[in-house]
Length: 175
Image (cartoon, rainbow, N blue to C red; front, top):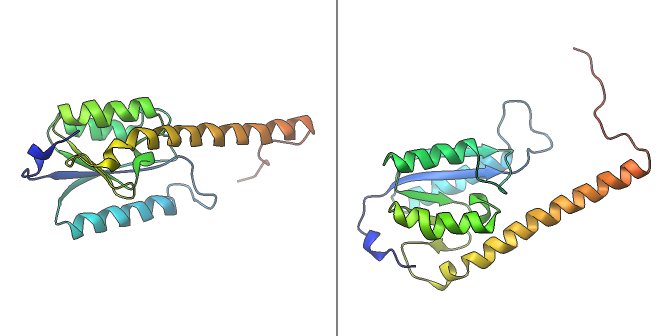
């Protein structure tokens, strides 16, 4: 896919940040360290490339296996309203871990709305026709498989604990 016609556009950048589970030490109402690290990386990229930062969209503790996420939905609304025309993520898996839906956004939705998509660590930039963009669907498949594999492992541990009669709930506490 080549969006070279978009190279001379004044980009209005939205950064999308997502973490599927909260950090172990995360306190109530605080962001996880991974969210902060992603923000730092994305803002550094924007600064180094002299891009026009408009907004950030964050889904902390939200699975990437579906696309019904508050931050993501707000980003889509801002695309629809013309507020942003470039989306930057740390890597492809931050956009999502469902390869069909990720592909629909990257291959169809973003181009139809003249949105440039960049996944920094995967070297994906839809403004250029590169082999990194060509391999994106395969990376998306691997991202989805990773999510499924992790889920199976967690479920097998929980099942083993159930089978051993171990307690799976949380300890009661007093205020």
